[in-house]
Length: 263
Image (tube, rainbow, N blue to C red; front, side):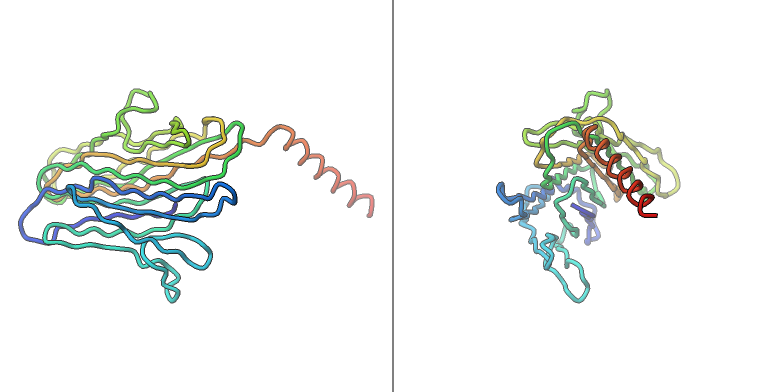
């Protein structure tokens, strides 16, 4: 899944508290052929849920909206009411690396945001290597301070609640590379503050096999028009067996010997 982008904006003069409770993206693979057969996206705002349309391009890549052949991109999707606007764009690719981009604006009182991204992977049994990262910015446009507080707890047990929790399945298993810490900035002239970057790994991960790579993002953002932008990534790879390295080295040596012999 690549470049999942969510942004929200208030379009009336008064301030209103709102929250995007969840964005779910799930791509399901057929057990026999591992062909992607469905992609689902949804969003909700203060209890109002939306079914987000998902299309595909001629190469079988799924994305938000329909495929625009003239622009070679997906059209995306948006909804606007008197209280909020949501815009979502992005593509979902069954790949052992998953990434997203989120931008939210919080009006009125602090709001709680939650997002979930899931993509199918075909990872065989054996040891793995994992890594993850998150970075972005916090915008305080009124000068009254800005803060972001993780809401997902500490699933990886490192003693710190993180903004982004990374898991594989099934069954759901923490990858041990959750990332992103709480940030707070006191009242000051309006400005934008960097968030991170926070990185974890590469390090040994949970042994396969695994069929999904998932990322959950959750936080409380201070209100009053503050914004948060997050760009996250999670990756898992199978560690080649020692025999694979040996065979590869022998193949290279054999090729070199063959070339020298012909000369």
